[in-house]
Image (cartoon, rainbow, N blue to C red; front, side, top):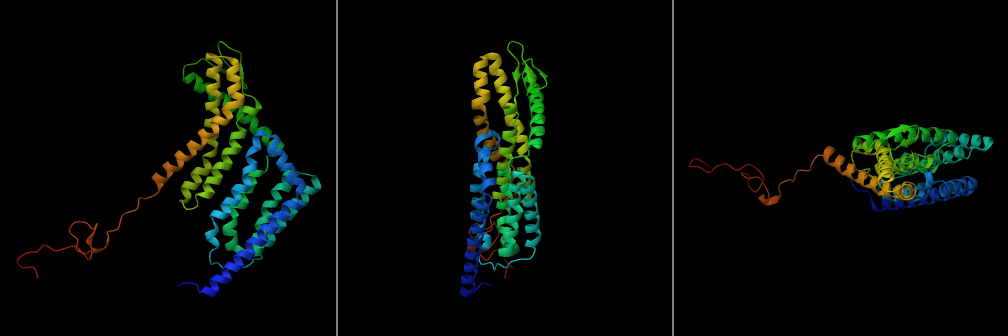
Length: 321
């Protein structure tokens, strides 16, 4: 059953009105919260752990554009379920303003935007926009206490796993806190900047973004890709530390420090992207059933023993009709 041209035109008009209104509200929210946005941009610019924040909003817009077919010929109607989302977002924004917590003010924009989408377009519009809006969480830095605790845990874990890797490869190494003791050189320190939290935040955003973008894949593949952020970040950081330790021991400390602090972080990003691509291809092959080719018309490509109509042919004998 196809929609009539008049209904299709009405649907396109409602979609255009909804998208325009949503874009205006989003821009207005950014302008009203200019202090919070300025703080976010400053964090992205000055903190190496959150430089990926510059790519969050453009990628969210890409998600909206990629999912635009979900609004095709759909009647949009607002929903009163927007009230709880708006209340949660407004309450969080009020608390953040009262306590002057910019992290809370930034996070408050997520439920507020979800509520606006529900108010303007209802559940069908929310189905289109929710992934892009939720992805905006990755533009917000972690609270200081959470980031400090996570950084310490990652430092110690990365040091221990790197020492185990070095020992497995035949190099004597001992872990003392966040120091790697090597036999013929000064101790190698896994500093705060090398804890791996930068890679963890970047790869979490990349893996969740890939899971949202691959919406046509089965849910299991998308969940596995999202959960792979932690092992990808750990593997990349351990490779970085291990290579640096080998350079520290075999070449020179100056070269090792330059690679460790300046170049390895950039080298690990392509490595993580390759791992993400490889696991996506692997999961697709493992969990997606191959398509079977249907026999073509008039017997072309039909299995042996089938006639032009597709029915099995009977052997022609003396008594055959």
